[in-house]
Length: 350
Figure 1 (cartoon, one colour):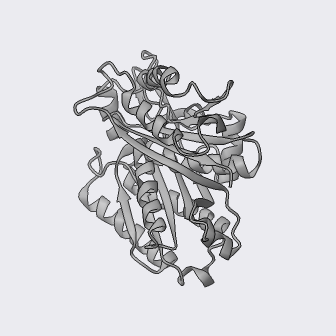
Figure 2 (cartoon, one colour):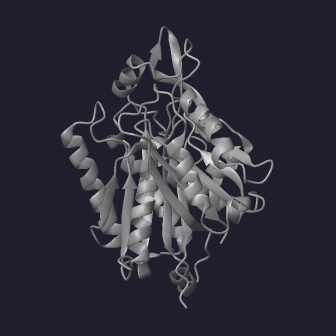
Figure 3 (cartoon, helix red, strand yellow):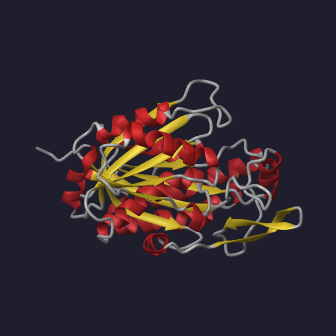
C-alpha cells in the first residue's frame, strides 16, 4: 500500500544567526546569540536589544522586508527537497504562508497589496501557479498553515506544499505600541518580548511521493493538535493551562506515544506568562515523557519570531534528526498565542 505519512523533505531559513538552515540550526544548538542594540529605537536612554536579520538593519513594516527574506528560505527548502526547475512545473505545489497581522501599525493598504503582488510573482515564477494561502495568526499561524498544507497534500489536492513563515518586529511604529502596552523587555522590565525577525520554509509531501522522487525524508509529521482557551482569555488572567494540556494530550495520544519524545521546542518570547503556563502543564500532560527530557527555545539567540516560529522549529527538528544530534526519539513543537490559541506538532525521525 502507498505510504501516506506526511514528511518534511526540505527546510530553509534566514535568521539573525544564519543565512541558511544548517547554519541557523548549528548556531541555535551551540547557544550562539545575535541579540544586539537596535539603533532605531530605545527607551529612557537605553537601547533595545533585538534579533535582526536585515543587513541594513532596516526600520520598516514587516511587509517591506518579508519577500527579500523569505525568498532565499523558500529556494533553499526547494533545493534540498530536490524540486528543481525541470520537474517543478509538472507538479501541483501550493504555498502556505504564515505572516504577521495585516492590521499591525505601520502596515498601509498599498504596502500590503504590493507585498502580496510580489509573493504572487515569486510563486508564479517558482511553481507556475497562484496557489498561495495566507495565515495571519501570530505564533500559532505556522501550525495552522501546516495543518492546511497537510490536509491538501493528504487529500491529493497537491503533490507537495511549501509551508513558510516570516516575522519582523523591527519597526519603530510597532515597537512604540508594544512599549506603550508594557510588553517589551526593557532595562526597567524583567519580563517582556525580545523582538526578533526571521524567515523559514518547509517542503511537505507524502512519504510515497518522496520515495518515488528519491527525495530523502528529514522528519515525519506524526500529529498536529490545535486547541483554544475560553473566549476573552488574556495573559493577564490566571491560566490553568487547560488548552495547552488538551493539545499535548491530543498529540501524544497518537503512536508512538509520550515515551518516544525526548525534547520540546517552545516559543518563549521573554514574557513570563508563557514560561508559567509550561510549568503548569508539565505535571498534567508531560509526566509520561522520559526522564530528563530537554526544553529548547530559540528566543535567547534570535528573539521572538512569532509567525515564523513553527516553520523554523519544525525545520530545526528536521535538521536535528538529519544530523543526528537530536538523540533518540521524537520532538514536540509547542506554540501559543496571547489570544488563547494553542498548537502542538509531534515529529519523529523518518
